[in-house]
Length: 143
Image 1 (cartoon, rainbow, N blue to C red):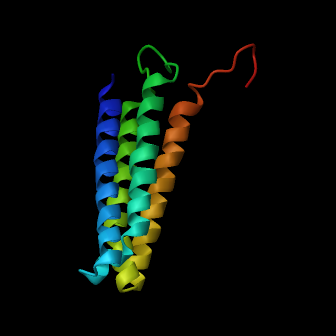
Image 2: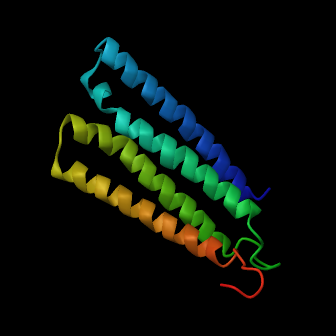
């Protein structure tokens, strides 16, 4: 299994645990109000589970299992796979901080941080699509 795949899958598991922990904290806050910021964790928890766990897990398995690009570069340009990983996780970490804070005390700087987070995710997805698109070969001459 390639290093990028192992890294993506292990990171995905960390986000699954983190998302479940945030969900639990949010539920505790609903029952016993402890700290007001915890009331704003639900969207962040969902984002960590969907983008951090599910999307990252899919990226890792797809990079590993899809047909090879070439013998020299089986998964395409390795630096692009790491750039995809870095952009996806930078966006997730920005969101992890900015989303609950923006819910608790909205502000322009936090709102723009969320925009930046989303832009990083979009870039990561475009890079991923570019990496795997040519690896999905049609049979019988189709595109």
